Structures are given as C-alpha cells and as structure tokens.
Image (cartoon, rainbow, N blue to C red):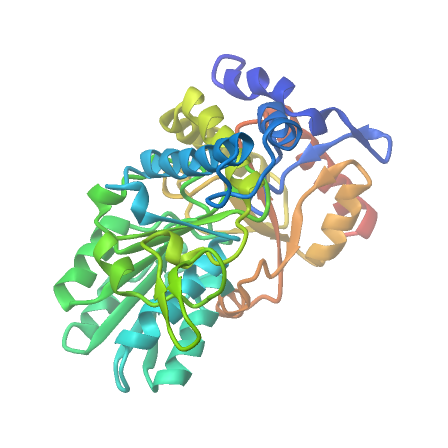
Length: 412
C-alpha cells in the first residue's frame, strides 16, 4: 500500500496547513471539492509578487509594472497550455467558474438565444451551471430542459434523442459532478451538441484540477473552472472560449482596461481576451494560479488522476463496510472524480460534520449548491468527503473510525 499511495505521503510536506491541530488533533482535510489547500510554492509566489513587483498591469511603463504585466500574461499562457487551448487569446480571467458561466450567459446567450429555443442541461448541475440558464430562459422566453440520471448517477444518454428535432441552442453540462462524483462522457455530449447545432458550455470546476483536459480534442465551445480548486488562490477563475465566439460576444462588465478608445458618446472595445476583463484584474490570483499549474504539471495530471482513483477506491471500500452508510453516484472509482457523498442512516449530515470536526476531520455537509439534484435523490442534504493529492489512506481510516463512534454515540 505504501508504494501505491507514495504520492500523497511525498507531497504532504509541501502544505503547511496540514501540520496544524484542530481541537487538539491533527487536521484531516477532506473538503477539497470546495477548495484545495495551497502548497508553499503558491504561497511564496504570491508573497514574492507583493514584495518585489506589485503594480497594476497593462498601464505602466516603469519596470515593476512591466514585470507585473509579464507575470499576468505568462499565467494566461500557462492556463492555455494546461488545457491545450489554441491561443492565450482564448483564455479569459474571471473571479471564478460562476462568473465565467455568467459571462457566457450574458455575452453569448443574450445575443443568440431566441424565444422558443431549447436550453439543454442535466439534473446533476451545480447551481453555477443552472441559475444562469434559468435566468436566460426567463429573459429570452427559451425552454429549459434537463437530461436525467439513473440510480447509479450516470446520465440517461437515451434521453438526448428527445431533443434531436428540437431547436437546441445550447447544451450546458458538468464534466464531473460535485455531488455524485460522476465523470460524464464529455466527448459524446459535445458530439451530440454539434449534431443538433448547439453551443456547448462545460463546467469543469471538478475536472480540470484532477485530470488531463484537452479542449482542442474535446472541441467544446466554452469551458469554465476555478483556480482555488486546483491549489491556486481564491478569486481567480477561467473561461475558455473559442476565439471566433469570443470575438462575436459583447462584454457584460464595462469600464477601465477593456477599451481601446472612448469618447463621450461611444466606445471601442479592446481585443480579446482583455475586452472581458474590466477594471484592475486579480494579478495576485493569476500569479498564484501559475505557480499552482507549475506544481501540478511537475507531478503530471495523469499521475494526479491515477492517485485519486486509488484513494476513491479505498474510501468506497471503507464506507460500504459501515452499517447504515448510503453513498451516491457510480460504484466504479474509474467513473467518478475524487469525492463521495453519503448519508448515515438516522443521522443528519450536519450532525455528522459537526461531530467529525471534534476529531479534527473537515468534511462538507448540506446540499453542496445542488438542491435540485438532492431533491431528485429524495434527500435534503448529504455529507461529502473529497480528496486531493495530499490525502492519504490513514486519514480515511480515521474518518471511518470516527463515523463508527458517531453511530454508537447517537444510537443508530
């Protein structure tokens, strides 16, 4: 087992927060789907930025302003290489995946969606990839429709046939569910969208940090993800969009930085991607994200994925041995990303999370910004454990031991 899980043991020293105690016990952090912890290289990169070349980008001709601009644009190039975009021009920095999807909704959707068009999505979406399309359907009089999932948490692909003769204008789907863990067949879904003439919007917040993504091979139109879920700082997100589509879109935020020329009555927008980045950008976030990408690429995204499969397999095996545990999503760890949502019979997920915290174990509890999905499962909430490269089997052992203790304490 030691060899199988060597990666986690090797990298843990790089994460200072894992050395702290919570309520007198070592921190066991199992909430990386919400946000990941940061390696010292990312922390030092941000510190170095503020200590040595903190200045506003694209505006100054003095040395540290040019250094700041270079670092910001180098981060864009690193993101482009990470997902194999054709050009850094296809990478727009946002605050998070939520803002990236809203940018598509306002910038592309308002211009291209007409009354009666079908906006297609799935029943397993995070609110970030649902509420924008609810809003667009109301604004434009479009018909919002959903592809369901089966009892194992896999999409019912046969339901796609119901929309082949409809005016499907947009197909928005998650690449990996933040509740079920399901990794959806993205290539098949994009191919379907092309056949019906729909634009694709891929929520990859739970995918880009965990596996190798190639947007050219996938051929999606838009993809959104967040830096803080992949070892980077909070407040930096990414929208990938095909260059032609971005060129045709209108910005949904206007002001400084995103213009070429302004007079009292009209303005000329800047080139892409800068026309979508109004105001002072999050340079710190871009610098930190670049350092996070460097860190992950040294490990290799294939290695990250293989490690998480083994860790998820280990966790599923431990959970099914606990009487009263019900988990949601695919049985096969190869079909899911590194998270497991579950419930313990007779105990509310919030109580589970509160009691686990007494043992220093941090997990997520609630609806995970996916209330309709939970309604579809017939539950109000769930407990969720999620992993990253710094987690190790002994932490899952501690979780299982603590869950057994909770069962005895609450008499279930």
